[in-house]
Length: 376
Image 1 (cartoon, rainbow, N blue to C red):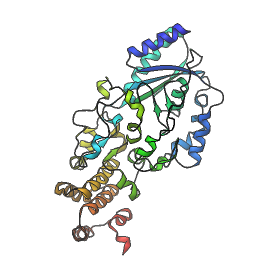
Image 2 (tube, one colour):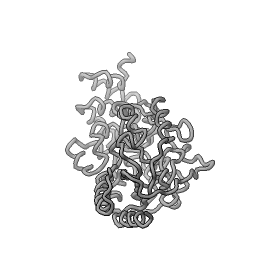
Image 3 (cartoon, one colour):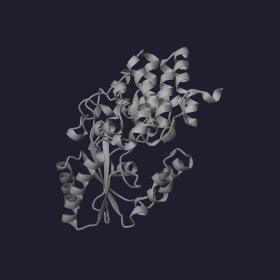
Image 4 (cartoon, rainbow, N blue to C red):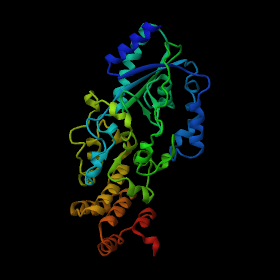
């Protein structure tokens, strides 16, 4: 069995995986109770699929009754530079590290299928492949297999790769090998909790997704609560603050996978240019990128909020002009976010002038709220 496990790891390494470890599935799993508490507290927000798939998600066998063990694989996507450096450039879009290159789902899934085909040819076992696309708790499985541990920010931390591992899982109908779980090495450190710009942590290991910028920028639809708009800065897709704050990143390594490296120009995208994107140009710019999946409406909402934060600090006529143009957008969400952003960058007299002109047009209730019409 040891020779087989070693051969599988060698094959995984040849496909580009940075780590590969095995776990036998326990009958009782503490992660199940944690998930139940998370959902019952409403911390999942509008992600209704988490509640709908709760029972299946609680244990891998609830999804595939024949599952006996798991091979958990890590694919390094470590950034080449400080992922928080762009936060100081208020006119530039800050996109989460994982989304600056191609969509990892396609890349990792392809390699997982190649590895799975090889394993079946060697063992004849039955298996199933997963890459964050099914109700499976990959992070607890990774901790069980010894790839790392779930830190106080609930993300996986690796002693070798810090915060920057994509996870893939292969479930088997038998136990091929079993590695030791990794213990928690967070100690008294709370850097990740203190780094959160929206105070999304109710405490160590307790994240309220409703306050998390990754949830708000990617999963949430519609206008945000105003306090989160101000706290987002220029983070228009995801947030890396809690990941980047972890001291274990001193061992992190830059990814060698070209498709996961930041695309040329993605670390200098101007907010004002992004605000000009129509749907076809949005799809072209973010082709093969995870950013595309949120759609232009939510994307421009995020961009506008970031532009408002920029205008609060800097006089930028180009940004104001782009926002005024977007007041005519067909989406109420886009129009409403443009109103809020303009309010941040205009004095009361100039904002009233723009408002008076705009009020000649019909508007729905959400846009009225942003203009303050309901205050009268």
